[in-house]
Length: 307
Ligand code: SF4
Image (cartoon, rainbow, N blue to C red; front, top):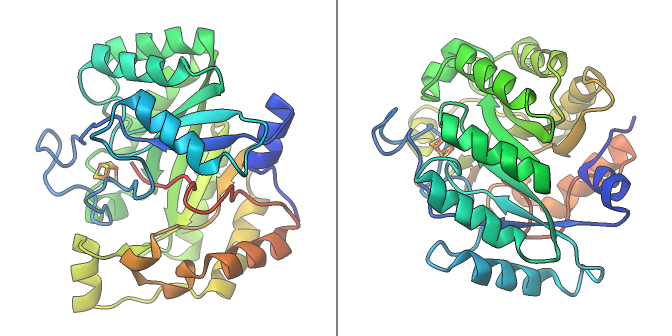
């Protein structure tokens, strides 16, 4: 079985390999600052699920320069996608965010922008900014959905219900130059494999461009860690998870681009499942199962899930 990986897609679009460079716009999240909730999603680490992004203290131009330098030896042809990863990257002063997006895009080697956010954190003004951007460059919006099951969504403190996602998705889909990537998480406690596949089927039924599938990672210093240590629940072993992925991927529309297939918790922060930390083995096992070059684009430059 194979699937359309991010690398294949980038090659078809740009004629070459393209690196995503993780940037930090200095945003917070309405699910952490009290607007929607305090404490955030139960699995979210203090870095807003963006452990690999650049330092938020630095101006965007400097973050771009440093990120490019870090992958320069691997990326000889020099094309990059600016990936605004940490927290909720459409949440904040819209003019300030617009300036940050445009700064990243002013680098001639940056050929597109990918913005991770929540569906309840895109204002009308921001939709307009994204539409304008999409007329000038390639724009991806990454929406954290995680699950379609309300019981799980409440448990993980997602802070919005499914219709909120649907409304944001509809709005974004009406903008011709924007492609939507949906983030989902598998193996939440209380969800059966059938329930997980219902989330996959739901995504496949929508005109989404891409998907990031992660297995639940329990990270240090999260509320999920406390819950797990107090009352451990089973998590899939690697082989079981890959077998599950084979079923899940088979059910996706073949033209959906798959940007990731596992969680990627930083090894030092990972509480469970520990196999995720063995990235080489995971990458090779997935590649063997799918006969694909996979979605992994280079150590430490993997996009993170969530939002
Ligand atoms: S995972 Fe994303 S949406 Fe949830 S609290 Fe963290 S930054 Fe906010």
